[in-house]
Length: 212
Image (cartoon, rainbow, N blue to C red; front, side):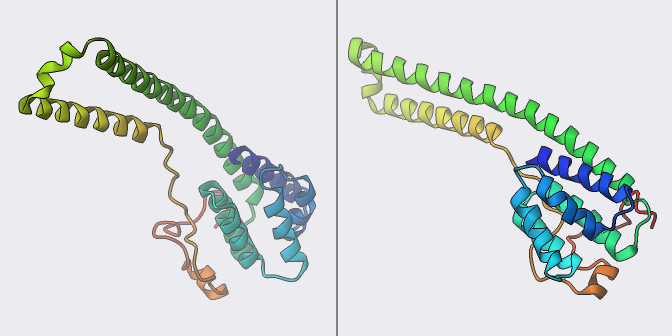
């Protein structure tokens, strides 16, 4: 999905650079958008053809894609539409390059997480097989755990193993970055000009490359 957003952003950059308006560029790229986000881009183009306001249609697009990078591209387009940015093509190019880098980074991170998941499965399997083997083949080795003290030690061992597995699971889980555009009521034109309707920090300054 990140690569799809980057590819569509590059399409917008090239189309806008060819002196097409932003709404026309969105309509022209909708049939050619990458498959991962093509339905959302086509819906965005359809809303614009039906006469919807650009800022509202873009916010609905961001809500449908529900990706932090899509929020960033949408925020740049909303800002450019509201302030008539003169360097939108340059900004979109920077966003596309950033998206490509993020996609490559996530691939590397996911490879590391896959290694963690494999290690967790191996540890779990070896532990379970070892415990089952002791119960079936060498019950005498487990005799000390029949006492009250042994039960306490066994309980502590189980807690340590459970905490270790929980930590491995947490390390292997992907945490989605915070979104820039908060879902909620759609602000009016005056709110967009004043920077409201954004999360704290999203409107702290002008977007780079917009010429504002």
